Image (cartoon, rainbow, N blue to C red; front, side):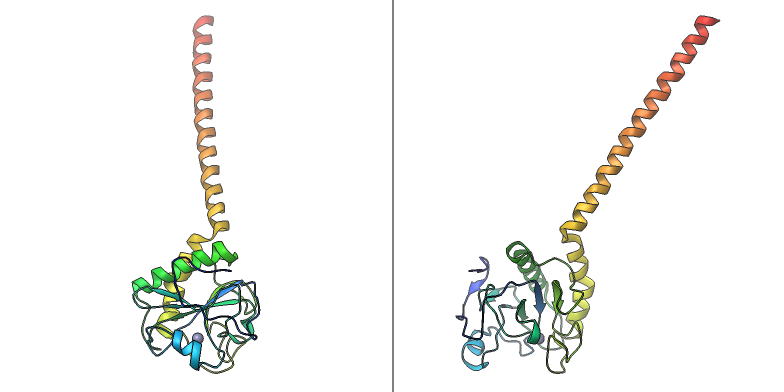
Length: 211
Ligand SMILES: [Zn+2]
């Protein structure tokens, strides 16, 4: 069971074509119809296609599928991907509330499934991406499309990727280490200054005593 505590639960039970998965990548989409909810569509009309989440323009998150089970929105990546739909038309940006909700969700996916907080580098790698990151058609989509739209792809690269970089625990650890090293160096320098000063004093006293 992997159910997001801050998402509105509208779970659609996994069908026979939705096996248990171990997610390692999160893929962002836009619904392109500005839908307030995709629950009814996924439950009744999409023909076995669905996403795990939908992030609305006001930042509300709906969850449609337990993330420990497959949802089918990412073609050949379905076996290891969590799909995140977002409300909007093809053109247009994610709102501030949407971006904040996406970040919160990515942090939860990192804690829950260990999905790395970095831009995914290969279609079958691990990290965070968007639907047409590796082209369209590609391993992530069988058809030509521009999901999640040029404006959101720009936001992904200009807002989300730098944020991911700041969250990445390995980078944070490296930064911490650099800080510690600088502090140790500063302490050493202080000590050295003190020793040099003391040596000078001693020399001066010695000279006086000899004189
Ligand atoms: Zn898509």
